[in-house]
Image 1: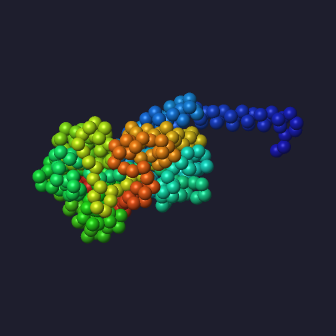
Image 2: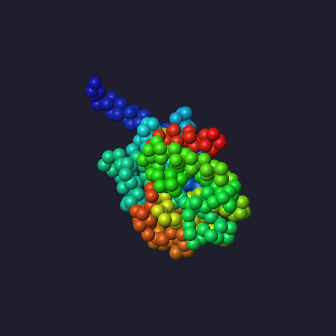
Image 3: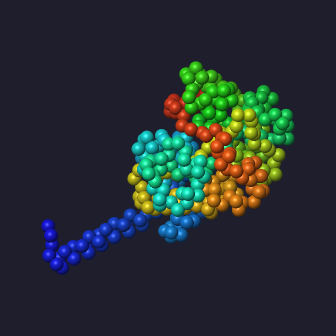
Length: 354
């Protein structure tokens, strides 16, 4: 119904006030971040806090299976930090919405290889997954305690009888299963039933050898530092931490290459405020966080715009070159495991000695 003169103007003003009130109410609540430890530190949040004069609410997950189960049970964060191999499961479960890259001022600072990862696109200028950082999975070992592996690097150190009870493995299937499969010449992402049985048998061997199964960086670092652990399946971050502490360690680069993980950021299907959620992601992939990732955490940032300013010593400490694109192109990207739920169940039983 068309309203005359002043009545129409009053109605329009009332609707504008109502709309304004709704926006203020929506944006008055800080968004929540569900993320790995270390990746909610102040440098990642600085731009968001400057823009909104508030800190996001933060919750930490220890692994993505735990995070997925918690969200399926009703937990509702706004921004989450899964890795590349995991986000498709969250997408298919209806937990995600696409992200508008035109609203990310730092998007074009991300490595071209990572911006073009297969499967992350969600249409023109839209992605399901924004790469945040990457690193490698291999074996960190004490060169003074296992000197024979310095010149002949092999992941078989984890199965060496003389180091039984002095090795460690990661507890996440996305790391451990492809790793062990690769050791015995099996593609974990395309296993036949017979090959899967071979991998499970090797995992049982690993459990008999291991003193520790953990994805906690601090636990692995402390075990290696004390000498309780001689060799540990680990991420490069463990190696770089021990290097900074002056420990005699090496991070293996065996024939066939290392695995490369890429972790990123996604937005929940129903965020409290999509603009704030997008701004938080943009803050996390910014320059300040990129420097902090390399210099303090020990991973490689997806944002490569500031790497030219980083001292050579930082790359030497990580045992990598400055040429991130070459490393990424030649790495073995960790991808989604088929029948992951079945694999998780089997790995749980194997760890329990079944």
